[in-house]
Length: 73
Image (tube, rainbow, N blue to C red; front, top):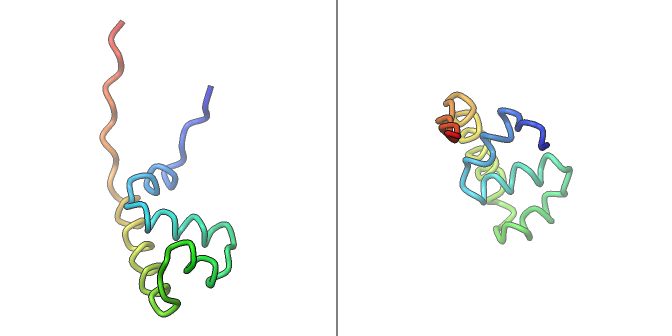
């Protein structure tokens, strides 16, 4: 059985892929130059992208995802 997802992981999964990837790579300790290469962005674009990704994550954490209805037997 898979353990339940943390609220942060749930929120990360709701973000657009580039923002989620940027946050995950940063959390993993990937160097900024490598992060830019993975995201195919200029180094000057990284700080604003991470700032926006953090803001989107904060907003996603404040909203509760809709719960999926349980399957009826």
